[in-house]
Length: 162
Image 1: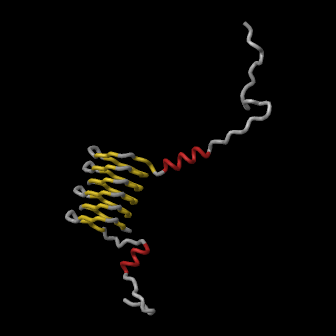
Image 2 (image 1 turned 45 degrees about the vertical axis):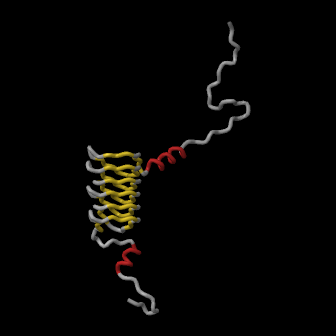
Image 3 (image 1 turned 90 degrees about the vertical axis):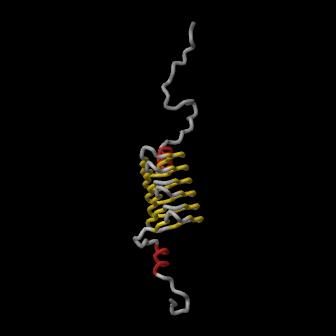
């Protein structure tokens, strides 16, 4: 418990949290548990109860009877219950029993028939692609003296008769 210099040494659980490694066992918030506060998990988390706060995890599963009020950030999110807040994940699966109120930012999105979704859906790459497309546009060249419109065919300068 104590190191050579007298300070308390961290447990193996503390070192797993610091290094970002997961234990391989998913964390479970059971249906009779209500949490007010943010959750961070280096591995997998399944929520069957109520959470008021932001969730950050590698994978998040919101169970059928679960209620979440807050944002979710994950590599993969599977939603079967109720979520009110922004969801940002590489892969998002919204089941037919889910009710989602909030924006979804994703790379891959699957929505089953019957799911309720009230919010905007946007791909990760959409903003980057818009920037790339705009950066390919060549800047306008200033007009040369005597040339009002460069690269335009010359028109006849004869006065109109009539």
